[in-house]
Image 1 (cartoon, rainbow, N blue to C red):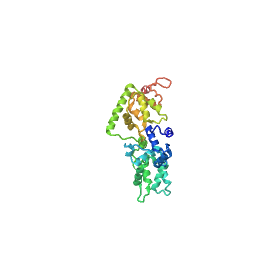
Image 2 (cartoon, rainbow, N blue to C red):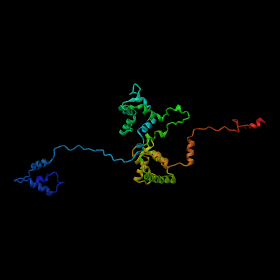
Image 3 (cartoon, rainbow, N blue to C red):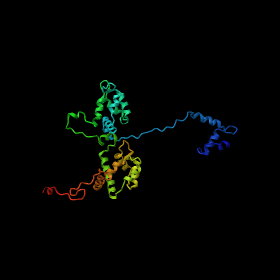
Length: 314
């Protein structure tokens, strides 16, 4: 009995009274403790199956935000990507159409988009909408009409029929649907954002805070984007006491890559650190092409006075 109490392995988990009770329960007529009987009783209720393998399931937080790209059609998003990469999309469809009929199988559309690295911006719903819009009665995909709609960003078809028509080259707005994806804010949230940004703009102009170098230190790749946590650290170091809700509100406005983490500080600085008219004029003159000295109308290259034309005629 004394040996059982002294060698009991769970003294920290069981009080001395419980250990005494166990020793009394399994004590034999000779005064010894039958520990094997206790082991058998415990083994009857213990499962011999191996424990479950530990798991860590990914549980995504539901995102109820409305994104700007949801307002564009699948053709608009693909057109923006094609213009951005200057892709000749029709040539890839023609590889699956040896007779040049302008049609291919619906499954080959996904293959072409995957080759062109465009499938990542096309969801399952967008793909079904695209097939339904350009499908023939027998299920074949009319890639000729699709490519014509996409290539409208490069040139206007049948322009020879309207000689006086004016066209414009693709610019940054032509690729905006593919490059930027912001959260669509409500009118109330927009009002809160305008008030918060006006407060930041007032402090920047009053104290002449130079935010650009601090943001550049965080942007090692010089891509114009940093994380939202880095933005919060920069604003805290520059004396701007922003709450978590304020950072989230600014993030909803300037996180334009389709997530809530990558912050576009370039657009933020354009809004809060607006240069004065003199600075804008100086920047425009600095970036303007070089202009030589104007030719003098009064002196020639040797410094002599150029006579007036009326005096020469007289």
